[in-house]
Image (cartoon, rainbow, N blue to C red; front, side, top):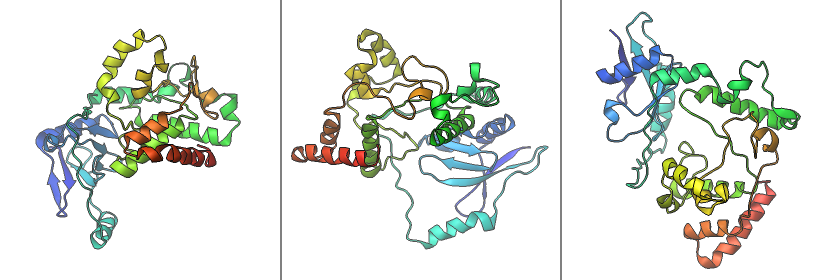
Amino acid sequence: KIEWQWWMDDSKWGKFDKDDSKLLEEAYQSNASPFVTRDLSFNKIHQSLYIFDFLVMTQVNSDSGTSRKIRRLGGSKGTKGGHDKAEDDGYTSVLKSADWEAPIEVKASSKAPTFHPSISVKDVVKQQKLGPQSLRGAGKGKAKPDYGPIVQKDKHGRKCFDEMLANEKTFCGEWAVFYHSYSAAALMYEVQAAVAACLFRFKSDYATLPRLLWKPFNDIPDAKAMLKEFPTWPDRDHNPRFRAVGLCGTSSLLAHDSEAPPKSVFLMGYSVGPLTGILERLLAACGVPKKQVNALAKKMIKLAEKYGL
């Protein structure tokens, strides 16, 4: 009989529910690591995203950041994982002795969409076998990926491409990746990310380039609505309604693209259309007093220029 357990706050092992144990065993037997799910009996109310790593035998709640040891008992492979007092209790004792508070639980807005992973373990394993997205198709089986003459000559560019392909390999079981190269628009993305982090404690785990303003999404709430509206716009991705909620991207780091292939534009960035007034409108929407908006926008642009953003 196989049994899965987790290390509890009161320093002892607790048993996973029978259905949870069955789910974990299926993922474990399929070599689906990391295994990502919300479908756990104790998680029906909170709907937090849990990440199980069967290589180091841990579970992580991606909402709270809490990491716990897990272990598997029984079966032909015997016991795997466990609680190491010297290794696992050291950090806990530091937190308990320090002036530290647990993160405040943030509940989702009634308007905010909830993400429900719907990928089966079988499909996760299938995607993992197919490998990194950018190395499928024409790039499959090549000993060395073709980064193109521009990136290949640049040490920083090669390092970035190496790391991006490594990330593809790690997450290809559950995630598709889209690449977007930009230049001046970086200011808008970075400002929104900074405001989200400083004012709203919005962690980059959820999105590295968040959109702060909810109102445009009332018009185009999801991908289905976008697919319906997009063909009716003569200006396509230059349309203001698209730019308010959407982001152009390519599905491969290495393949050719009709407009902005990463191999060609990664180092210099890519921009189409003016950004005049967008930063000012964003600041005003975040509550900056009207009299201060223009001066603050100029300071931010000057700072961005100073650091090459």
